Structures are given as structure tokens and as C-alpha cells.
Length: 373
Image 1 (cartoon, rainbow, N blue to C red):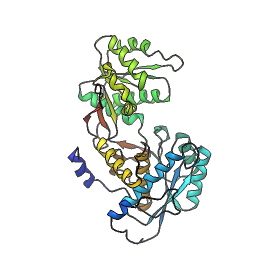
Image 2: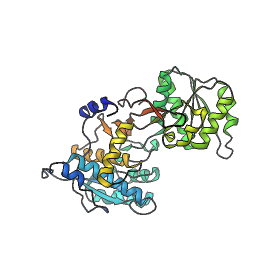
Image 3: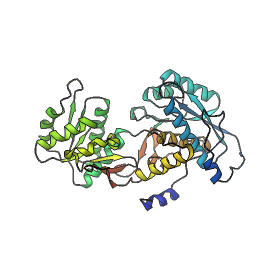
Image 4: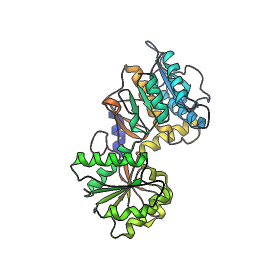
């Protein structure tokens, strides 16, 4: 293992993942190889607990929904608690379909829900039921008293990368991002993180989408002399922003978002060399990817990880009668801790753009709940 502390962490944190028979056969049979390596599960003891899986099993996102269902099956298989059963229900990829699926699962006895996928579906499900919901969206505005958002949120990313920049001496931050929902959330998260740390308010330049001249926004941003600038773009936008910042003089430390993790084009931009960005813990994700591939003979999509975590959390909630508030655990993308009111703390790693190569791991993921998590 690349980071030996992860093995000790896994032994100390509370187990989450579980296993149970399906209430109805899944669309695709579960691979038999893992079952041959484990002893048979004991017979159920006590009443059955049901969990609704709200996934897009038809329509354009059906392949993704099937991969998420596979990941949920894997989460259930890993623990071996036969007292928990899953109720897969098709959301059809729409808010109305998600609300109908949630009501159907609740009518059949579900006591917790894993999914749905999008922010619109999550809002509709939250209005239709008071059950604990472990949603897959990254829209933190959906988090509420009974809704936990398991996607990687702008706030989680900003807190982590600002903490890493702070370790490099940065205190004055700037933001260059599109003037859309994502950019506005990055700005709000930066202001909150700076205030919490006692740092000056960040300089924010949000570029209108109708006139996306990133270079024109750079002089005003750099006039406020930031130590570090977060670029809220990926791809061509990130490269253009970095070039404009570098052309203006000695550049500040450049920061990015988790969108950079899958963008190989950034390594070809000299102005981005050494730029820091947050992302899921690589050791945890590699472990999950290998586990999934061994079971289903294919590599999982990125969103299979949150589905695995949501299924595990919903199963534990069903088993224990309440969400595991305050418990830290190792998820598919690294350590997670749930808080009251829908708060999710996630430990993220920090990477640096490396010219012509894969990003370099700078800091492994910390335990959630501390600085930068």
C-alpha cells in the first residue's frame, strides 16, 4: 500500500459496507468470484430492514445507473449483513420519476434511501419523504436535516486546497471563475474559509459566460496582490487563465479544483506547472476500482464511488435505526464523516500539476473534521 497509515485507519474506523439479498433480481448478475473467497453469510437474525436505491435504470443514464447498482451490490456484499435488503427503483432520470421511486420504496418498507443522482431529483425526493437520504449530487444546497450530499462539493474542494496553500504561506487569496452556479459557490466557500481562518477576504473575479474574456479579468484580480489564485476553470479555460496570470508578472501560487484530476491537457501548459488542486484519495480509489473490476470485470465510472458510499451509509442507517452522525469511515474516494443537518466532511488529497506527466501527490487525504477537510 502506498500509504501505510491507511491500513491502520481502515482498522480503526467504523465499518460501513454491508451485504444482503436483493428483494428482486438485479438487471445484471453479480460476479461469483468474490463469493468464493469469503465464508457464507450467516442466516438473517431479527427483522429485515429495507433500503431504497433511487437510480436512473432507464433512459440516457441507464448505463451509469447500472454501474451504480453494481457498486451498491458490492457495498452490501462486503459486510455480509443479511438483515438488510435493497429495493432498486428507477428514477427515469427525472424529478417526478425520482419522487415516485422514493414513494414506492417507502410504501414497501424502506427506512433509508441511497440516491438519487441529480440536484433536481434530490430536491423532489426530499419534498416527498422525510426518510434519511444519501444523495449522489454535488450540489451542497440540497443538504438539509435529512439529506446528506455525497458528491464532491465546491466547499470541500475550496477548504482543502486553501488549507494546502496556507501551509505554503498563502494568506491573501483570489478567485478567477465563471459567473455561474459553480463559480458563485466557489466564491462563497472561499469567503467563508478565509473568514474562519482569520485571513483577508478573497479577491473575486467572476467572468460573465456571455463574454468569457478570462484575460481581461486578470489585471483587476492581480492588483489586489493575492498570494494564491484559484482558477475555477478546467481545460482551455484553465490554460488561458494561467497564461494570462503568468504574462502579468511573477505569478502567485495557482490553485485548481477537482475537475483538473481527469484533465491530462493541463500537464502540457508550462504556466500551470506546480499548481495545486484537490481530489479523491488515490489509494482508496484504487482499492475500490480494483474491487469493482474483480467483481464485474470492468472499471467503474467515477460516480460509482459515491453510489457505493451512499449504499453503505443507507444500509448502516437501516441497521442501526439512525444515520451514523459523527462516525468517520473509509469510503470509495477516501475518508468521510457525517455531521448534523446534512453536513458531510470529506478528506481529500492534494496534487500538483507536473509538466508532461501525471499529477504528483503532494498531501494524502486527512481524517475529516480537521483543518482543510
